Image (cartoon, rainbow, N blue to C red; front, side, top):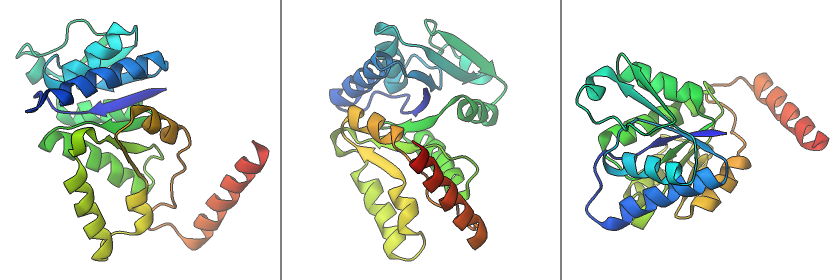
Length: 205
């Protein structure tokens, strides 16, 4: 399994953000989970990579040429791919990943996970999306997501497909058990067929 990690290129204003990122990378490596991330050595991005590498894990960085030329690329990764632009970077990360984990970060972090979450709703992929809620960082975000449900802009199933936890072990376990809801705009016949397939898989396991 490889997980894409979206997180800040800054360390944040309290030490626990960086400490949690390092610990997450380390635990992922100990579980045999490879990481795919933006390729930087700075901020939480660098901490996640350093934690995984310290525990002997596999870390793949995907970095656009413009950023690599600014010398913020991590030089100790298992693999570093330099790609033409940000769109290619996101596409490549999505291709390599079996799921998407979000740690604290800014606009770019949120843009990346929201794109993958939207694609999951549309059935473009069926991979889990989750948040490691370090020090309650994502509490306001999930209040807003709850508001989209109560205001009638999102079905409850799509809000609940997100994994949000303070504990990395819980996140990994919930990813392993993840089952996607019916995709948005799916026809009734396709929904019934998908449900039958899932029941058959469960009965066979």
